[in-house]
Image 1 (cartoon, rainbow, N blue to C red):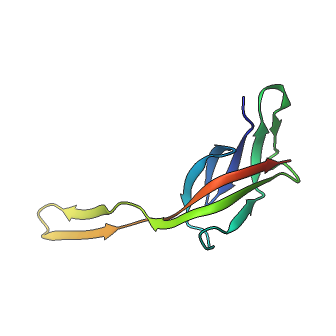
Image 2: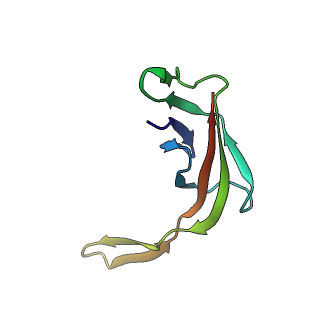
Length: 105
């Protein structure tokens, strides 16, 4: 089993392992830059697993920014029947794609 971890960023939790590419909510940084996540909730595999209460002290996950971009267009349509009320609006969510380079704890 490969070493896995659960990190928290952008109000969401992601299960990752070394070498994974993950799309997360946008964080600042240029493509190719390194980032570190210190909010690690779980790490390890099998008997060597560590569970935080709520975070593991001193644990870090390092990653590299692969891409900054926008997701697919979503249509937000509001409608009230019999009231002549219609609103159509589009939205594209910003994301950052990262590649996990290391898990240390």
